Length: 261
Image (cartoon, rainbow, N blue to C red; front, side, top):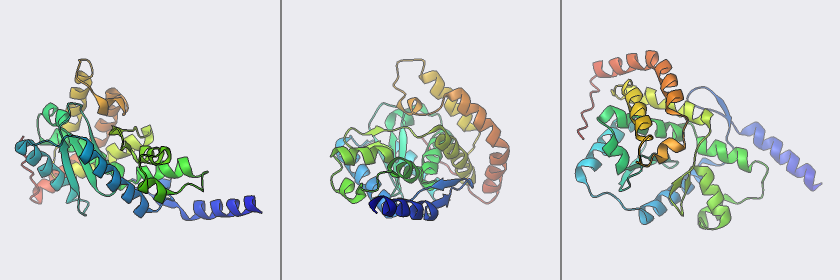
């Protein structure tokens, strides 16, 4: 009887959990958005307590200027924090939270290159990749309590859930998404940056710089959790014919971001 009830519950979940990402891909995401957002807020709160926040006003303004231009295209209230960290990294969490490391800010040459990364990370949130990953991983574990995980993020269950979210709150580690999720976030991100008036062709230059940095001693945490730069560059080149006209339309409409590093 118990197995039958679980089977019925699973069938109901799978029938009601089908969603569509911004690219039109069907996905399985049955976790309540409110719970996933709550976990993102908890994780971001922990990170702000555990990591050093940059006091460089110029870098902070540069990052905020870029983020504001992109998030205007998607709506909602977004919080962005620049963390003093030499790794080349950035991330976005459910609940509209964005973190950017100073190492990445120092690497980029201009606003367009950083916009490529921020647009990509926002793409993960818009496509609900954290929810999808949780749903896939926890689908067979109906008994898990997300509320308990949020209430006790440092327990093994809490850390497991937060890891699926995309961040390990205890250590501040960004966990890798799947190659499918990365490619989809690229497609969403390059479109977002173009609609905001940023030059999407600079995304190519960014990944060339990331590849070059990976050959030296500088830590490339962001690079380690993503597909190879060569693969990403080829894919981004394929997206440019659609993205460049979006940039031209945006600039014709008066969207000309001027974020000075």
